[in-house]
Image (cartoon, rainbow, N blue to C red; front, side, top):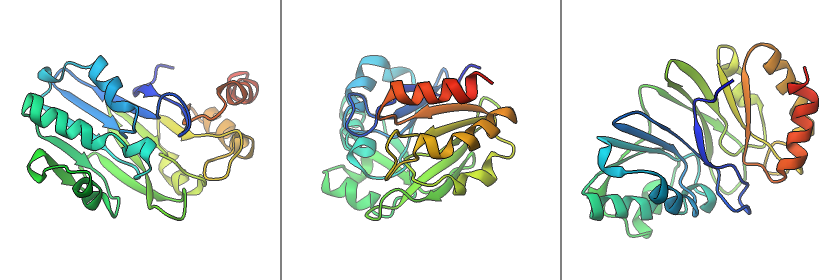
Length: 216
């Protein structure tokens, strides 16, 4: 099935292209996370002059998810005179933007949105982390962000169309694919499109998914 979200990268934090998804209409752009490799990908891909609003959802403040957020804000403000909308519940995001030299007038910050529900999850003890449920193009999408547990997302998957899920070969601060594959297979059988992301070993993870989900 075709995915609603497109990706600028699906790599884990130590990979070449940081995990970042986007959705665009003729006049609007939504970006989920803006890691340290994302700014250059955005510059190459998009004509920012055509958008009436640009929105960035930040799930947590690790560098591979927010490392070029300030750069994007500054670029849009000083190059295009465009004010960006930041949507995040991260406790320290205002301070983060302040210490990275981002002018208050260059962005609007909100911790909620009519079509976005934040899902509090666990990733690492040093940071608060969130996934989101979001409605786009009449599709109900659940997006985990970085997480080491799947349980917070299960209530939101009862009527979801797509599940974008953080998966890892090794686990730790992320969901180990072998530990959750049975649950993912169950969700896929219920009709949910499963989209793996933030992968540390794409070949291994693809093999597990192909064997257990796509083959069924």
